[in-house]
Length: 145
Image 1: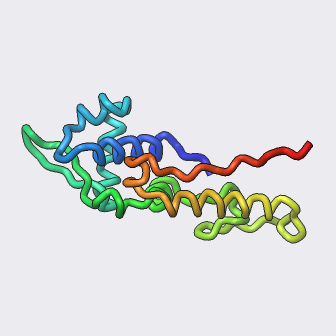
Image 2: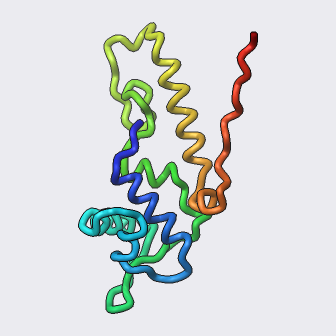
């Protein structure tokens, strides 16, 4: 799974909106997230259509979160913008793509573990977690001498 600029920029915008109490203009969002306005317009429209943000027209218009940060699950956002979380189609739950080498494949367990680990982390992380800095850290394995 690779997150494209669309996914990265969408998360940047959601974080910024989560840090604000009111509506913020698209120009200010673009400036603070370093996202080109034209591209940001497309992303915010998609986030609006998905129900994550709302827009307000007019001179004091802009965008704000539609849902509280604790109800915005990062895994859902990424899946809706990017598609499956699986690194390979043969282990995708939502977009399975069979492989002629699948039976007896020694890589499939690794791809499955990667998919499960990424999905578990993203599905258990909300926008509120990001805003509060509550990101689970992997335990470091100590090499045995």
